Image 1 (cartoon, one colour):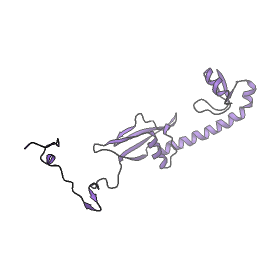
Image 2: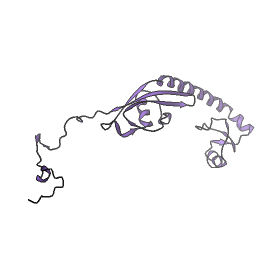
Image 3: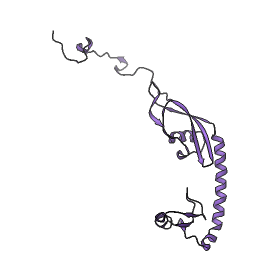
Image 4: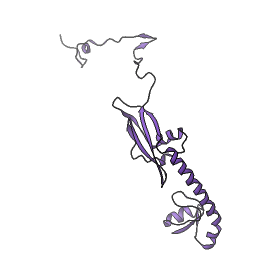
Length: 186
């Protein structure tokens, strides 16, 4: 089904574009929502000015995205994460965390712009592609480092009551080396 777009629709087109869509999508969504109409000559003339404005806006947006791409190409971001002694993360670092780290540095990046195949699951540094639109792609170096937690390297407070160390007596069976905890016959 061919329709004339009355509004910009992401990944479909801009005002004034004639698009070919599935019949159900056109009849059940685009037409009832007022997003598209029949592609008649009079409808195309009526939307000519709106199309010109949409094209100008699209060019401004493309120029802005090109500038953002130049700014982020080659930058490095550091993401702290909790990990075990072998460097395996307790969770993972996904597109959202990378986008949040870039946004914290003042760059306008959405998680869908980050082209990460699988979440990062180890302490590492990785080059991650970021694509704002089809022809504007940059690479960002992501450092996943161990998160510093206060008191992590210090001994725990287990067994301490009011600042005094409390010793816990081991049962005799365990103290003698028998792990079962059962009494030995004498």
